[in-house]
Image 1 (cartoon, one colour):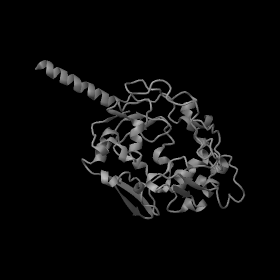
Image 2 (cartoon, rainbow, N blue to C red):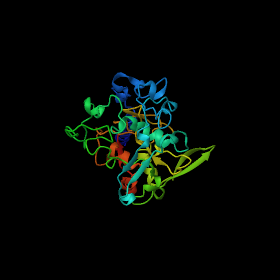
Image 3 (cartoon, helix red, strand yellow):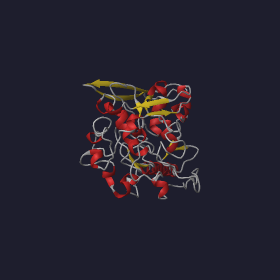
Image 4 (spheres, rainbow, N blue to C red):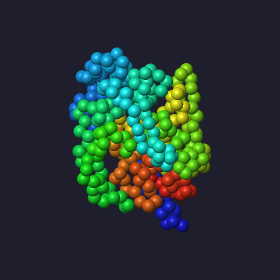
Length: 339
């Protein structure tokens, strides 16, 4: 009996150590990574004085009074967004949209001061560097920083991919000029108010899986809260992974259904680490750090030692929204996450 108890206690100790270790990632490279902007650092994106003009922007004379020049009023942004806010971007469609896709129109300058300026603040601001077509950011190599600096993992555990897991081609970072047709966004994930919570209905809505939202508007400002039904399939998924990207969806007075912007999936200030918190726990851990890549705003580690019963965090990340292909949607609640 004592031997059995000793074995049980040892097993529990090992499980506890593994659980604790999963949230103790320490990055080995600068967390700002690519957004150190070739040495310019924060000033590559934020101009401490005069916004885009102070950062050497080439605004047209008309843009100074109409289509641009106000970027610096928002977080001291230092890139010219006047051209991208005049564009209409077309994103590809899929199952949820009957193939019709989504269209994003920024509305020009007026979006900066409207109730729906998330379209500019969460999308156009990013594309002022990452478009590469009408808007070209400084010091952009159009190559993933991790790929260019040999920082991508190969995987070394059971079930993990062995050897090089990335192709010979570089990973592009300019969405509107990625080597295909210039200005083509049909091959990029949809963003904008039409790419919203209600569109995630494959094969049924997230509400049917146990995740619902409530938007509140106070003094012309909107906020959203989420409710997860105890014991629901989505609750089981959160136990195994979390839902940080869902909490990155945005709302505004004009668009009160949570929708996707660039910063829903990406944290521009943390390239290689994600911190959990009481507001965004990861696998029940409210105080932990996890490996991530490509500025993904969640645990996302392509080198994690996944197994048939421990899903890669790269897969789990997508399942937050595309829950119809999550294990828990099929009642498989015991498949954990390899971080």
